Image (cartoon, rainbow, N blue to C red; front, top):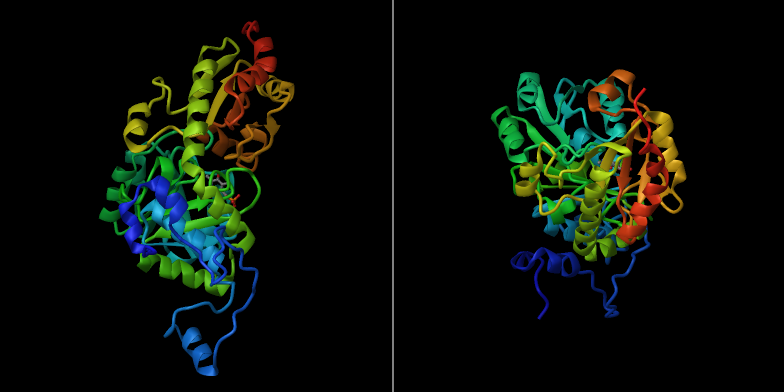
Amino acid sequence: MPIDEQDFQQYHLDTLAIRSGRLTTDEGAHGEPIFTTSSYVFDSAAQAAARFSGAEKGNIYSRFTNPTVRSFEQRLAALEGAERCVATSSGMAAILSTVMALLQSGDEVICSRSVFGTTNVLFEKYLHKFGVKTSFVNLTDLEEWKAAITGQTRMLFMETPSNPLCEVADIAQLAELAHANNALLVVDNCFCTPVLQQPLALGADISLHSATKFLDGQGRCIGGAVCGSDKLMEEVFGFLRSAGPTMSPFNAWVFLKGLETLSLRMQAHSANALRLADWLEQHPGVEKVYYAGLPSHPQHLLARTQQQAFGGVLSFRVKGGRAEAWKVIDSTRFLSITGNLGDTKTTITHPATTTHGRLSDDAKSKAGITENLIRVAVGLEHISDIKADLDLGLSGLANNRPD
Ligand SMILES: *Cc1c(COP(=O)(O)O)cnc(C)c1O
């Protein structure tokens, strides 16, 4: 007998990732179908009226109701332990939808300085225009978060581990701080995914995603998602219905299939990244490695309790400056020089001139984005080959003597 969506909660995450959010049709297809339709037909005028008024549940129009998208939403909600998920057209649309739905002019946001560069721009430049003011704090300094709180603070926003320096913040502690001050804690869970970290279980109000990264896992589609309580998600859904930053059914299908292998992939990404981090830390061409899986990492113990593993992204400073960093990047033969991450293909990037290039020099220096910093999103190629590719440029730096 088929299982109700609610009953799925008794199963393990690996099972939920494959079996929850079932999408069945009268055709008996085993693979999930993609519903490429903009609208839906009704049996009668009365049914149309009931659907539009909300009196009857069902599909209306694919800006806000589509079976393939809904299937992805249900599956991700099950993994995040959320009552509901709302899928969006991109990770940035997930952040924008959350803020537009839950904040108003005069409200204030406190945001970690170590967030995705575009998130920074969205808050500082665009949301500011509409009267939502943001102050930026050091992710790992609880006192700074506390000091930034005002009577208007309504949202705390952060990523953990952060991009690109892999700093880890205590989600439970920040959730407590937010709730004591009538504010929401929003966690961008892109780096860990629900396989490695479940922010809602730790007290966060919202866990959101750039599905573009690990949820897809093979660098094919742009998408995003917001997960949380029914009450909060109803607001986010209302914004999506009215403003239209909707996920396409095709992309939803890619992400839906991506979720089925997410657990295996996150374990493999994490295993490769840990081995690479260990190797880089010993390398004479490397000044410092940033990866929460290393015992040398300042929040290693916190990461061990808060996360199931340490994820696929690390960064390191080479000995030298921009020229040396670029040399290491340009010397690689198969690593992809691109800002994307969460792909089976290992990617390498120079944050100071790409993903974080739009930040002011001051913001860059406060966020620790130096010229000799390289970020690697470790893929699923053989670890020996990844090391060898990085060694092509790094070994040349090993003998550099400081002037
Ligand atoms: C990529 C990314 C985003 C933005 O997502 P898009 O899908 O590119 O819009 C937001 N947060 C983090 C941590 C990201 O890596």
